[in-house]
Length: 93
Image 1 (cartoon, rainbow, N blue to C red):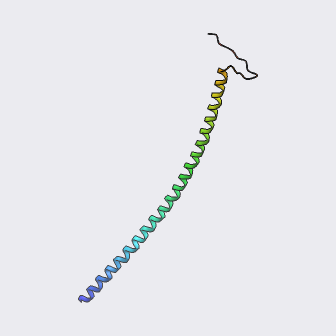
Image 2 (tube, helix red, strand yellow):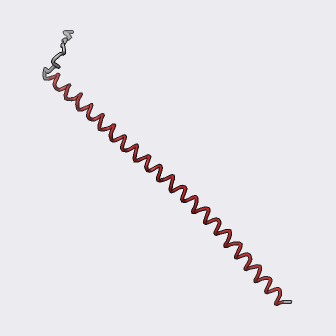
Image 3 (cartoon, rainbow, N blue to C red):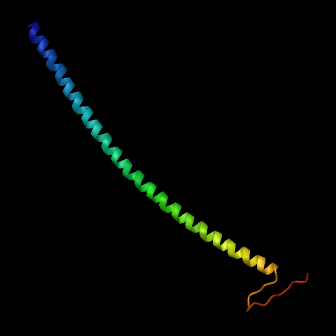
């Protein structure tokens, strides 16, 4: 009888260990799946960020170019230059 109790106890422990391994395997599988989804989302967000950075750099270059053109025009006007078809009115007040 004591031997049967020991066998039942061993079987119960073995069953519990098997159930634990199965539960942990499923849990780890779910975590790995979620990790894969998050990595995909991260790659998408990083690509979107890269696209925005490129667009921002292009817009900054455009703004700098326009500012440079406006600055050159301002210096030219101060030096007395005008466009060929432009009429210049000087405010005397």
